[in-house]
Length: 254
Image (cartoon, rainbow, N blue to C red):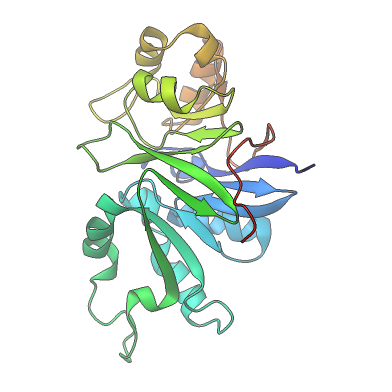
C-alpha cells in the first residue's frame, strides 16, 4: 500500500510550559488525522485549529490532567453531535480505566439537566498489550512514570514509538523500537523521579537510538534550545514529522 504517514504535534511541553502546549500528537495517514495520543486542554485547541473538528479516536497514555484535561470538552463536542455521540473511540490501557473514571468520569451530573453519563459520548475500548485500530495492530507497553502500571507508551510498528511521560526505558525500547521507528521521547534539560533528563538519556541509550529520538515534554523554549545545542532533535508545537511506512500487522478480510 502506498500510504503516507506523519505525526503532527499539537503540543510538546510539560505541565507548566503553557506556551509550548500540553504534550499531545496525532498520527496522520495520507494527511488526515488517524489516531490522537492524549487529549490535554491546549492540545485539544490546537487539534481543532489544525483539523476544524475534534478528535475521533484517542489513545490515553496516563491520567495526569495535562494529558486528559481536554476530555470534558471532548465530551461536550461528542455528546451534542448526533453523528458522533457514542462513536468517539477512547483506547485506554486497562489499568488506567478506574483511574480515568475517578479523575474525570465520576463527576456527578455531567450535564446539569441530568440524563447523561460521561461514557455516553464515547466508545471506551480498554486495551492490553495490543489493540486494533482501523485495521492495524498497535502495541502498548508500560513505562516508568510515578507508579507501576500507571503510564503506557504506544508503538505503530516501523513508523513511531511514543514513550509518554517516562524515565529512561532501555529494556522497553530494545523490544518495542527495534524496527527503525521514530521515537518521540519524554526529555527535559534536568530529570526528576518521574521524567527523563538529557543526562539520563545520554547515559542510558546508545548513540544510534538517540539519533532516532525527537525530544518533547521539555520546560521552555530556552530548554529546547539547550537540548538542540547538545546535538539533539526537539519537537515543536504544530510541527509535522514524516514517518516511515508502517509494518504493523494488518487485519485480514473476514
